Length: 100
Image 1: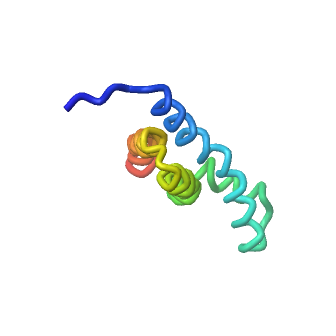
Image 2: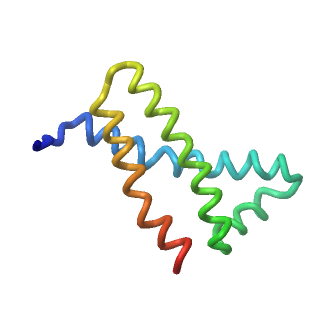
């Protein structure tokens, strides 16, 4: 079965790639409020320590699930498929951060 890549797949892929990048600072801000530490400290943890990079980025990836649910309910299956593909594209980065 051959799947043709449509414009809506690319839109979903773009949303899936940029959404975690946009929501990562928001996740770090919320965690800094919860842990009663500065935002700079949280950002330093994210950039310097791989064990924290993986955890915080995984939390930012949850934003993709919101978009996936929205487009799935609107029956925009191609956009939802693109979002899932974007999340799969983050797997090599997460493996690199955790093991190297």
